[in-house]
Length: 299
Image (cartoon, rainbow, N blue to C red; front, side, top):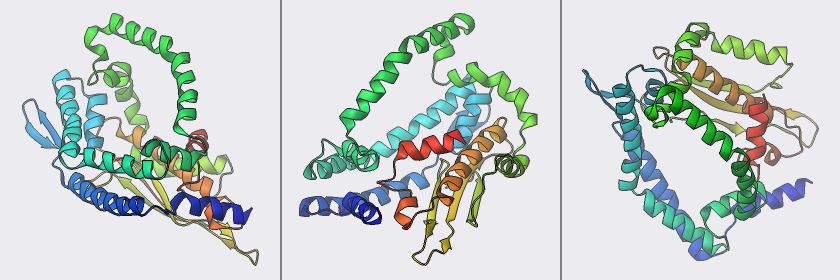
């Protein structure tokens, strides 16, 4: 079993094609350049009566969900949309082409096919067979829901800058006093303890507040995976995970609590993988993304 996971893991990353190797090097450099540019992007919204206000993507999303002003919601949407134009002007289309070219040299249809196959063990065509069933089974429900929303709240209710607010805006404000983010860590600890979910001696570093330049999505990663050493002793995991709380924003407490609970679920999952190699408990391919996310969403 241990030899098989070594073979499977190394097979995801070893490239024998010289052209693919060269492309991977160029891709890594371009990814770094794009990430650096995105991190320095001056993001924000031109708010009515305030002028341009610099905000993170997290703050823009929060305002779209909670602001009673459609003009303000639209401004925040335009601010979010500007990310697309920015990354396209800073190399993203070229990055997509390079990734697809590399994947084809390795025998895949494209880069997405390559990533799906490495992580899930089946190709893109099989994935879309699964997703098509989901779409076919929910399309009419979604259509009916959108029609009901526009009938009740007007034709503009389904516009992208209005949708979240129309579905939950007033509820978000009413719930806000019950979910202050300063209680989030305590609620996480109490909830997991009540479910008898432990971390087997793991060391965890939590970075929970949104700030300028911070990666704008919650994540969890493991500098040290958990595993059972050859002598039978236990190596606890070391995990770093984030949330994106903005204590001053309406609704941010609940959103950040959900993110904290989710990432803490990933940390709990991989802290408890008891196998004879760290390759069984690491986050990259061939670990299934669907498997990891299902585990965390269940928690």
